[in-house]
Image (cartoon, rainbow over all chains, first blue to last red; front, side, top):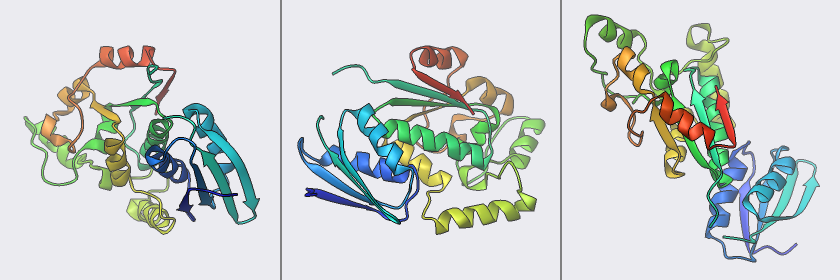
Length: 77
Length: 160
């Protein structure tokens, strides 16, 4: 999947991937996509919950075993 | 824009593990766009005491208390397996190895995120804590009515 920005959360544990995602998304433009590379398994549940609460869109979650890639589209300010 | 959802919590405990839980939830809530208030009371005040310098309080008992119960985010202990500091030292080491923020770092994040950190005025009065006992960025003291005023407007409230 094509992303406009990438965020390395390798080795970071909850809630750091979410907090860092929020910081990066804040600076992005509406319609842009952020790719998050994480190892914390909780992100598979956490990112959809974060997106639902903040009104952004969780496009895809790719679990590649050790590494999990999550794509978030900014859909509102 | 619609009014922000509110999240309010009381941190009663001064234990490292419980403070960690409180700051994890507070910073996450803020990153989810919620307006967060953390109300610190009793032993919880130890978490937001500044780490440096003596705390000046009046009267022999309060002076003694603030020496024995010095507090400060970097001096917190685990609620279990402290083992004269060994357990806490190991936990801090494990957190560092996992690149996990310390309570001091969580406090800095909370400030940057605009989380309101409020010391309880009654506890400050009884324990003899002046405003300058706390780390920078902590709000002015407030009481139970302030907390309840925030809590009744909040969708989520916690007591830790």
